[in-house]
Length: 215
Ligand code: C5P
Image (cartoon, rainbow, N blue to C red; front, top):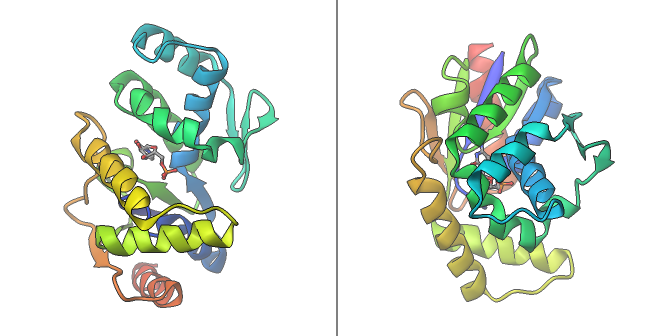
């Protein structure tokens, strides 16, 4: 069974997807981590982001392994390094490239084959797993998402102003919504939930209830 959870940056889908997987004893796939790791590989290879054939070549040659928690790039655990702002700022050069998306989508389908899995990203329900049994699109207002992000950064001892976070998030939303292939969108058969004003526990309970209805 496949549970696909999509939505914009900061909607809380990653932590919800992870918890849903834990509760149901399903595997978990963070597809953003794959995009991030391939981006890190091109940074390490010092590829010029305008050199699309070189980006595609590096992406084709890397060995990515996802074990449900950590991500290995050519055998190296890069789970923390892929979260750096340098990687986040550069992802679009790869995520916009249809050949790279095709390759990562095929890898996501291989990872999910024959498993019960909760998969999380931007294009999971609409493109990568159109036959997923359960599809969710979690969203929240830009202000609410930015507010949550500022709190999360604060808890990690990092400080960014609300305005800075909101501006960066708006830029990412525009990029994620406008790419020609694999753009951020809700599948037609996805259940859309606006999580404004909901606690993470309430969102988790709501999602779990709906998954259990189709199990
Ligand atoms: O989810 P996360 O913030 O880690 O994703 C990082 C970026 O990777 C997104 O902003 C998006 O550009 C890209 N991405 C994507 N398709 C996915 C998952 C992530 O294009 N399925």
